[in-house]
Length: 348
View (cartoon, helix red, strand yellow):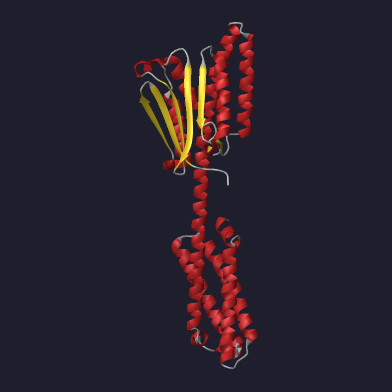
């Protein structure tokens, strides 16, 4: 059914098929006019016959694709030979070169007489049709492969995003539980309010497509507000974002795992307070984003599980951009920096 739908559903093959035999009609009739014969009806009927007959030959070819190769080739050859024989004899009768009685009474040479160019014409049609059919089949297979790869990437991305929310919600619910047990009702209330705001925004985006960096930073700010409610420690986030970078597109929540890591490292390794710098700019048709926080290599073992955030982001970038994006880390002078470089994408 797939092969047949490819043939009947292809306007290129259908139009090409009709045009081929219309061109034959024009040249056939013109040739007869040059020699002083006006057999337009014969040329028309001959062309119509071949248009229908080669259409049947095409369907036969498609059907035989599902049969054993040798059987299919032999069947197609016999069909084409019978078609040529009938066409050549019919053409001679239609153009008054021979009568029907003479054709039926004559031998095989009569049926094939003067048919060399028609044989080459039929071979040309077969070659063009098969070439076009195979090309369209390969294009269809290519599109199907691309669709399958796209769906696979989307499934992987959804899996990565599914890992994000449960981890984040687990931490927030733990903090909410602590606030309730300690009787800090106001902190618990504010945490629930900010969490609902954050989740409402993420649901509106539905994790589909990409969003402007400015929207991503607004999401990050909601996340930061929740983190502020979870702890009495000071959390300061400084934004240094150029206007052209703010309008560039990024995958939604691509920065959230990095900010979460930065907050955890800053609070645990950098002292009682946390200070994070987010910088974004554009250069050479690339969007550059960096996140910097306090860091102490000697106390790295005090924080566990932070590598999963980097792996998650790296995997997402690879799926979305391949080699067009990269994530680099740097530990220098007591500060840890994560840098992301993406192809620049802006609204047209």
